[in-house]
Length: 344
Image (cartoon, rainbow, N blue to C red):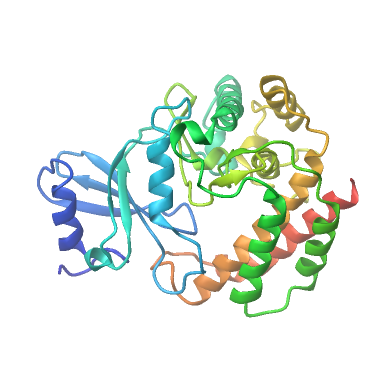
């Protein structure tokens, strides 16, 4: 065992395992990707600058049913031959003795992760527009995939997706949180009572947005990443989630006020909706509900992340004042959900 090993990585064991999968030149190093607050993601680089990506669960306290590496590996593998761009799979390790948890390794896709407004402003308005058009088109392509045709027909139940999600995230908060969240509970009741009928089903990514995609040098989506929340169900929840992250240029108090898609060249939310509707042919009349639901769900997810950070489970990341700001962000997300529901 080497000194100063990355959190969650037994260097010698992982090094030996990886050399059985691919050709490694010299020693390897692990660089933790600071973006993302759930599974730990490392860029693995050898001395010839060959790169791969390793994904494993966070260390320490993990909520039940979360961070299933085998499931994420299965989804990415199944999508290899579809029109949805994903990294190539190198291998999956189920043996927890290697590094304390299952993990998988995939190819490193070159490009840009655009996670903040300042990142997007490095591109021209024309490049920004291309990025947002590609983002919508890839989402349509994902929702057009027949799960049965790629071996994912049993990935999950297809019916009552929103109902299942409401129960799941309510349970996660009830079982995992260390505090009372009355507005969260009140919104759960309202969302349960007003959920629209589900029209069809498909593969839902679960967290589809610009910064969960690798943008290639041609400004199109080169790879969709972070599939840990993927399941089967109501695909309009994906669109609602993407629009939640998009931000609102007319509202300075919007909780997504640093969204990269607020830059001038990106499609407006109305243009996103129009492009998706035209390409998919789906009825989007209930879309505001899905956006309200996604604000509520993100509050639940963020509460879980807050608990894990409190327990020190996410490694030695320099998070500064982020931990202190979790409660403020969760309150903002719940308020945004409530406000959106009131407009329906």
